[in-house]
Length: 302
Image (cartoon, rainbow, N blue to C red; front, side):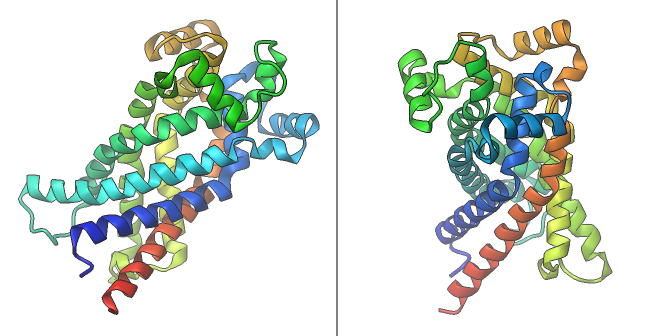
């Protein structure tokens, strides 16, 4: 029964939602620091400076600005991502002429994850747009372009609809897709490669314990961010600064940053991102794998 494609899709979607929730709850403060440093690099000298200033300005709640849309974004993204990942794995098997139950290589899994990320980007972009704007709201208010009282999810959503229309929720979509495809190739490739190494002593990947899964997930997260971080920086700029009427595209934004601020600016906020990546993505895959196994076990018991 568990092999039914509809049931399998529901399981992957639900397990992805569990993983996305675990990822946000583990790493939100570091993600907030990342967005602030990417968008306003001249305001912060580093992670510690950003953390101290955020706490002094807004208090501990400042680190959790955008948590609601972040949860929505990650639940939506990972639900669609892992559901699409299972589907794309089947497509890869068909393309390379493998049996439906054949185990894919690490490279083939990476390719499936890369294609699956396109579908995830379509649901991620609107919610991540709201999240990034909320996370950088204090700095936006300092600029004088945003009035006080516009720092709630609802006010940001209303502002986007009023000023930019429904299409405004897809500011940065091109950047998001450019980030997701190579990023998730490395993400799933790194995760599967790490699991292969841990399973080399005779165990199968499905028999790995929680520590091995968390390390593998953390390794996948590090691989993702090290490859795509400059793209993510450009995406954050587009999504936040478009609120102030600046709506340059990906290439123009990238060129402007390099010319006016230097190429190292594209790595602003990398430290909190890498610190966050390991535990957050470790928690993501741990929650995903165990919730998926639990649901398959429950279905098989009927």
